[in-house]
Image (cartoon, rainbow over all chains, first blue to last red):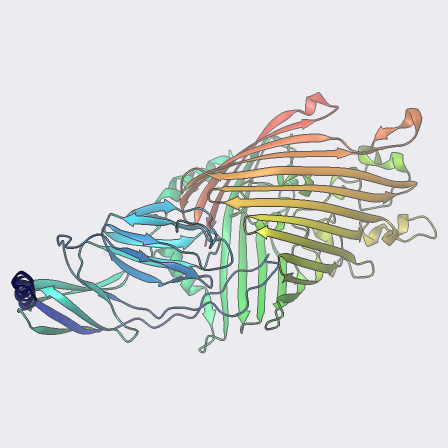
Length: 214
Length: 401
């Protein structure tokens, strides 16, 4: 390894260590609401009935550090898919500025739209083969309800956050949020549109803080 | 003055909560029923529609009112249920003044009920009950929320000169000269035609198919749809085949053969004939295209009614387009035309029904994902009677839950 490369690698490790040393981990558990049963698909005038039951995702929560934080990396592109007449995932947290693609994996039309104040759009009817995959950039923080005009039971939520520090819980409500900047931080747990719980915690560099949201 | 009743709803509509977890979401959750294991589930939903009509030159949705204006509220309740992965059922109940609201008082009416069995992997379904006919492509979008217009396309509501309460005595006994009740006259297809029966439908490659046996035909009026009113002694046969070359395009062909007289007309039938001998034969072609913000539908109908001395024909069609201008605002335009054959010989030859052309223009604004307002202008151009040329207006506020 050349001296120059050795110097560069050493510097990077050094900076990385400093950054890591200035960050902490927040972990814990969020008490989740009980799971809902699958929706009933309206098929009154369909010549061909859909067999089976629409899959449902278990309720999840989003845990995040209240911002704002400056964007540290390029805007991401994430996907909210339509598969088997359901949005997958049904809850998607994103940072402001994120582009969300809405691929259609069903052998039928979908028509994704939102009337939410944080993002109002209508992608029209599109097929699984249509390219480019229809997408939208979510610039404003807030809760965006995503629906399909054709399939009334389809619904998903995009939680647009002004922070890069967020994580989805697992189905039991457990979460682990790494890379949290040290200091006094407000940690929030978004459970549903009506319930968001908040706790203020002191995060020491290199420490792990455990908080539960009952 | 009854139009004033609509105003509070229009003013409140934009204020109706749109957010996730609002009243609409809570209501839907409270109307969702399920077994503990989720094996059976049911959802109750519905529409509240407030309709207003002005101008009697048009009869949108077979609304035969004589006054200059008509206000019509309607509550439609649906129950959809799934029993395991193979069984689906639905019920539609309406609270209104009738499918033709121009007469009668408020009533609760069971319009549709059906149970559908879809064997695993069979790609087909068997359905029993009282439900919309499989003819054409308008049936699947006749619900007030989906239909961009207040009323139906012309072939589904324009009254011909044929009637069902008695057998015509001769060719000259067709049309207004017959002097029968105006509700006895038949369109080619009576709206959604919720007759009772059984259907078999499915998919085979790029083809969808459906065949059904109903107690009465597509032109029969609502009184005849329940099996308690008309039994299966002269069943109607309906069939439909759809070719889907592409998800965007559907080409359909429908056929129907049925008796069009009511059983109560049996006494008026000449000796040696049955009321079931008076047949309506219907052939229809339909086309639809949808992509992005554009939807186009078109249908053509040829209907033949058996009458004494032969048969009479009527031809009808329409082209309809809906364009979404913004996420909340869309506009729709429909051209409709219906013509009738001539009957008789020489100087006594006459047209057995009035030919007409109709233009419908509608705009729809969605205040929220579940509330919308339609405004419709209809221009009628019946041939032969210039005094009947006129414009009619209709408005409909629809709240879905």
